[in-house]
Length: 384
Image (cartoon, rainbow, N blue to C red; front, side, top):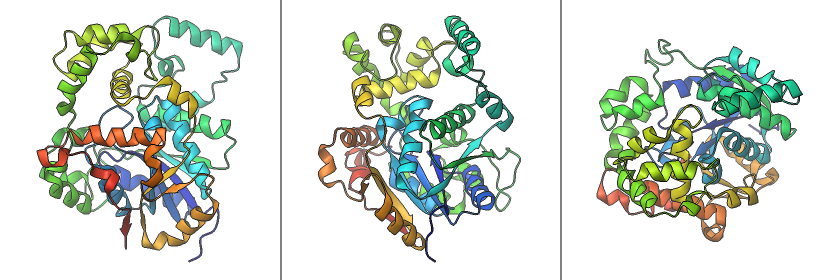
């Protein structure tokens, strides 16, 4: 079948790991848009919460391709470990640059709350004053804007903002997240990715909540599974020996937060204890976790300012049936498509991806899988 412009929907994702709720979103996206293809932009070695993904990017791309996606590209680390606005801007810009997506689909816990938040006119002086008052009381920016404590509502608002500011032709479509009681495939239940991660490495425990082929990938992963607790000594040691000026360079650090973090690092024995000591109403768990990843990887304000949008799209995998789509992307993308590392080893943004994979691999369960080559030497996944 020939691929035509406007027959693809873009999805921003992490799939950490892929589960029945994700399969539901992809199925609903295809049904509601009538798209012929689904193109995913997925976080690589690290996710937006500042933690290493439980499996490398190619394994997670394979999960997606087996369950509704047609092509998967990697969101560069420079955007993957940033706040909601930068994360959304990077992902939307990458999808827009590919030149084939007519839709941007995303999951959302509360679409009514999303619509209400997006209706706020931030150019209104009264609204701006109200925002400043709430920020002065110590509230986070998302809470000050009236967004509920729902990560996907916050991201959804930023996706819409990015589409509007870029004047993108992609149209947003919010998919109500499948409730926990929803039976989406063969009677299997839905729980969150964070709950699934807490069950690992017990693959049998997650089996009811993931498609069968995803269970088989997880069950066969063994020592390749990556766990955040393995970062404790590295993170604490790094902070205890880091000058305060160096931590201040991290992209999400501001308002003297570097001092608060380094003070806590002197007492905390684990990464979780460190975050618990620092977080408050103004500084959320996710923000502190991202800052720790940014400091470890070298995600600085200077690098972020120099590269406000992705300048390449690394292909992780595609389905054989999507070759017409891939040809169209190859002809029409406004940014280069990376199939192999090659000359990009010396690109400052891609080198960040390389560092992220090298650090994430240290969290593998088995010593053999901590050697650091990992995903960067893997071939593009092709699913027949």
